[in-house]
Length: 142
Image (tube, rainbow, N blue to C red; front, side):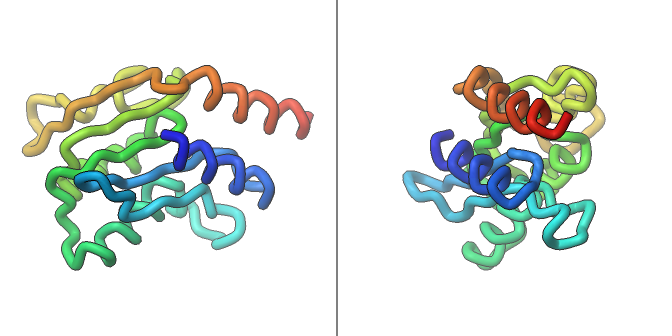
């Protein structure tokens, strides 16, 4: 989670919403990224998506079986869907997102009975630190 927080800080320095993600397989971080939606002019360039793409290239397979994704905030529906498509084993995230979280706050995609893949979800890891990054970022823009 520290790697994800580091990526979130870097994203904030670039003027991006401070969200960071890291994909871990075994004991190795295979990919890490921060939000790049503004810099890439790409609405899908959320930290999770960028990290999943990089991890899939690194592993030579779009299926990331056994992977754990660490992200600073609860993923949105798009990112949760990408993680399900990648067949990750586990999601660990920091702060809940009551306005759009798809891990448990608004939707529970990772254990939805109609989906063909499920993943373990661990919320609240370094959640206060992750939430503070977001609060400070948006407070500075008001």
